[in-house]
Length: 113
Length: 115
Image 1 (tube, one colour):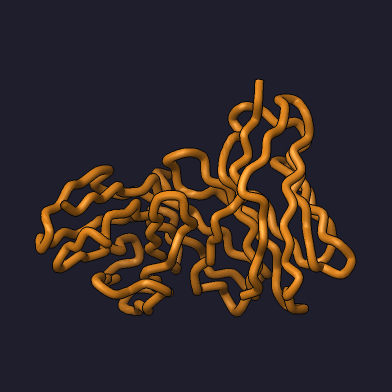
Image 2 (cartoon, helix red, strand yellow; image 1 turned 90 degrees about the horizontal axis):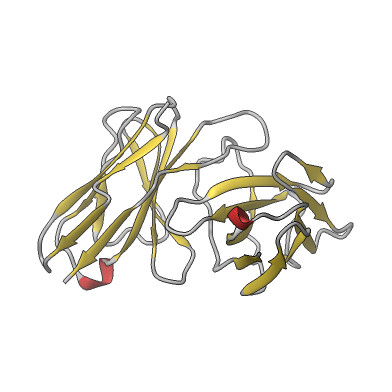
């Protein structure tokens, strides 16, 4: 799986958009970008994933650059409950995706009131 | 659905003791996983299973054993507990799909301390 680089921590004001960057310059053509988050003391939670097109769901938007070497997770209107560690994961989806995920240290996003 | 459940929530072990961490899921998922998370670090895969009777090693399997006799349950066994196994353990499950993604659902974790 390609290596990812994320900032250690970020702050964002409540109600503003939180933009979390992820660098994955060695990503290969069949690797997807996944985002999970982990609220303190809980298990990780899936947010969104994409291959090369931008994606949006009820939680967030994922913007992937045209060369696919980086991406940004956008939480459009951050709330205090969005304070968590956000993990950017790059991996190939292979036939059922049985093997596990590789989590780095992620970005600790702190939403300020 | 209860989702993925784990017991116990907390446990303190003495060096050399053994214990089993329980994990169950009620979503009829084929795949199940065990991860550990050390303080300030991401999760590391210990073992995973693609179905009843089938298990495979992950990144950090030493010191652990697993079994998968049913679709629902995936217990993790520590035979001789060591301080290096002090960690938070997460169990997860996912469903095999023919699409491009299978979301992993995580349990609440078991916090284990070995003294």
